[in-house]
Image 1 (cartoon, rainbow, N blue to C red):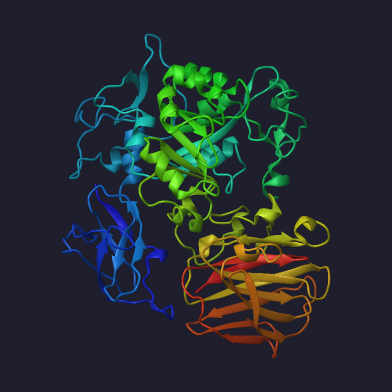
Image 2: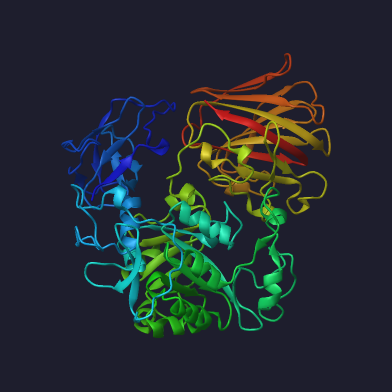
Length: 614
């Protein structure tokens, strides 16, 4: 199977001034430096390239192959400069995963339980793929342990023994090219974490697998929730282990409108683990994070009751909670933040029956990840929410899976947009906030138009001295561009309080209060309530003023318009709805290419609408 390489906004070759380089031939290599040249490459029509890949009319790199290779490759323009990393996307990954996950027997063509035909590549045609809508189907009378759910070409659902012609969901995940992408807590940057709604969304968006958290509560029930207490995400109060019971949790609700986004309802159901299995257990492989004593045994018992042992992995911070999974032959994963292990060895962990290791991307070194993989462990890295952080992981094949709150954005498969989707009234791909703001990312005000709102006025975000920002990752990466947006400053705590637009190189978080050297390079634009526009260039975390202009003061609650033009040599920032002086021009070409916008506020309540990129 061949994979498409390039073709997205991150695969555009630019010169030092940030202009796209078109018609430039180059060769492809296996490493950033050195390595071996790759010649088994095809164009998108399937024709041979001879190993030479030429940028198209927009400066993009795009090719197929080589066969079955899934790691990043490096395009070399041959001018002595650096090679360009290009990552793959499997052309028919979605179709193949649907077939493999549901155990359609590919080798049985024309039979009742098989498919009518295979296409020229030996795959099931899209028209014959299984229906994904059915949820849990009980094993019928006369079934036996070890049966698996199989879907035929007529979408009928039946139980059958796994054999050489069928594959279980977890085996199908194993056979996929790495890294596999796993929706953390169901995809908690896009929907309320660990809710049925989040799980269904992740299935609909075709996550490779879904991770969820379970707790054993006081009366022996098993609920899907992350925290040891229920206070943060529900209308209940107390410890799950000592205060929560099944009846109490069933009467409670997830308060998503309070802590996730103001436009979400606050009466979502707190799900039982059994409910989640019944709802999505036969649609996608599941990773079950067992958080407290006894939760591992309860999870395994429910998985076995619903005949889903072939579709799950049990994960925990200690080996005690993995014991029942090991005994049942269910795959298990030990969490260890830095991946070094304490009181255990890689070989000892594998010998005990656990072949997966979960590590924190911010604590585990690439050397530790490579060492664990070399020892035979399948390494899952959590919680990776920014493309910059994913790009820093090993490209050696050592990362078996990536756990992310927004895997679709982080892996780069969501299309780059040219306008906001604030009208949807909820968060879109690539909108994480800064660490110091906690869970606060802003909210939405629907109407005409629809607004995205951030409020750091008064004492709301006093923990970060009145500053917060949210990445608008779906708009990047950018090179030369024009950003237009309407904005309203509703509340300003003082005359120099500001609305901010940060243009960062890469999608690292930006914090003008406490980021320091951790901040990305780029340009930060401040529009203050007194009308002053200030522009700062950030290098190594240090801001330097590069432009300022005093414009008319902003009347609270009035709609303003800002245009930000980034050319090869200049930044031009203009309040287009007022008379001159209304613009500041900065001549600077230090940072171009791979840029991402962040919307931020310092000690103001500000809203944005009609945000576009041209």
